[in-house]
Amino acid sequence: MTAEKRWHASSASLVLIASLLLSPAALADARRQTPSHPPGAAIASAHALATEAGMQMLREGGNAFDAAVATSAALSVVEPISSGLGGGGFFLLHDAKTGKDVFVDARETAPAAATPAEYLLENGEFNRDRAENGPWSAGIPGLPAAFVHLADKYGKLPLKTTLAPAIKLAREGFPIYARLVRGYASRRAVMERYPGTRAVFLASGAPLKEGEIFKQPDLANTLETLAAKGFDGFYRGDIADKLLAGVKAEGGRWTAQELAGYRVREREPVSVEYRGWRIVTAPPPSSGGIALAEMLQILEGWDLSKLDPAHRIHLVVESMRRAFRDRTFYLGDPDFVKIPAATLTSPGYAAGLRATIHPQKATPSDLLSGEETPLEDDETTHFSIIDADGNRVAATQTVNLTFGSGLIPPGTGVLLNDEMDDFALKPGTPNAFGVMGYDANAPKPGKRMLSSMTPTFMESPDRVAVLGTPGGSRIITMVLLGVLGYDAGLDAQAVAALPRYHHQWMPDRIQAETGAIAPQVAAELKAMGHGLDLPADEAAGGRGSSHVWGNLQTVLWDRKAGTLSTGSDPRNPVGRGEVMRMGTAAAK
Ligand code: DON
Image (cartoon, rainbow, N blue to C red; front, side, top):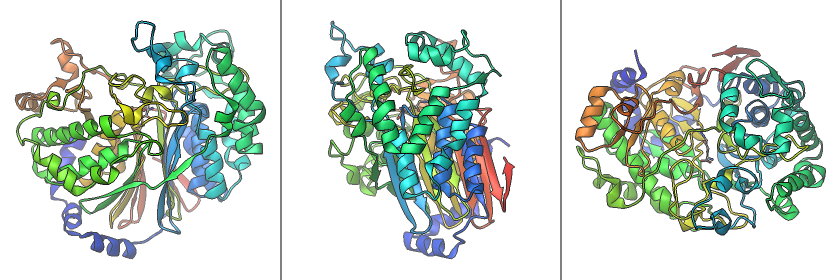
């Protein structure tokens, strides 16, 4: 049975009906009565070696937060296409002992030199090359500071232990897989501009081939310095000097104070009740949580399981359209702009938006004004962890586009991000993901660029899920579909496999993966006035989007059944979920 059919089949599920009838107070009661300890631990990540690094920490007596550092650092080594020490990320934590959720924001910050004027060509047009490639595209990295923060405040093991698997992978190497070969081919022209990058990726004289062992000795040394010296090992001293020199040699401008002044921020997550679930998710500077809260509360007005696919997709798309419109105008770094978060996440506001949705007709995005632009598909990575004490981590980390800026400052092994493109560098000009912004997301010294990364927890009396994915602006809609999938009773693997569709206000078109929208449903959606980007449209002159997208990694604890399971996106063959029971690890 396809996931789509199962969604329908699950509509009569007692779980769903029971959760509908629960008031928030009853939910809290039920939560207290259900077991607080999972029957083991589970990790799902985009690479088997990174999942194993986390598992190793759990076997050595570490908790979910130690496992998160090990998994995150290992991903930084084995998935340089997606994330790394030169980038940033968000770590959503649940501390089982206190019951508290906290959001560790390790997003990159803007260097002071990176004013909007620096991203304009002489003719006033947007300098896309500067925004996406090389030193000006890079923000001050946040991920190393996150490791130190997690180890100091939440972990049980020292960084020397939690970074050890990553150091070994960097020093001894790992086998190159197909996605790295493809990604390198697509970014080669940029990466080969820089001597520091050539020294790493062309060490053998030619681009790496699938199956070859890729060693990163400089990165191993940088990780070792971080393990030995903590924050100062990366942000001050020898490594910092090399980062500054490498940026300067390519014409960029970072200062020693900016590196030494980098700080992670702890923020209160966004939380929202949805049909008996408590959803805990990413606050600004992510746009994901506020958008998710808006969409879910708009959708709460209907029982989606009772609708035919075309009407269900129509309403979900209309909720996406409205949330992305608000993203464009209101969201940015909360340390710099006042965000009307309470309003945007309130049920009353959602009810107002819901009232503007016609049950049978698409609302043209033009009525809300804007521009149309194409999208690209790139990288980033997510992992999900639950440990045997019930601690949880949902972490999404990134260098932004494929292999980030392409620039490795010589001698560091650190591939810098190109996260500056996530700012509204030129107001109203769409970025690589086709999303745009204005003042709220304008670059300022030390400011964090708006993100779509949406690490998320879901909790009902019966089930606890941790989920997230890469995918640029599509992250938000993938997490929405994942939440709706869990609510409809799907299991973890079915949630990871769910076919995907997306709408982001502008461009005013539904994009869909191959097979996600059946021809008959597409015809009905068109009749309602929706524009569609379907693979089949390509022949008819549409832009099409014949690729699949996302790399969703999720773990599920079924409290009632007393089981743990994982869902690892089938679109990514090297991803892996593992469940550990009483000292044994079972891959799933
Ligand atoms: O923070 C963000 O929203 C983006 N830099 C994430 C980039 C991404 O997911 C690329 N992926 N496919």
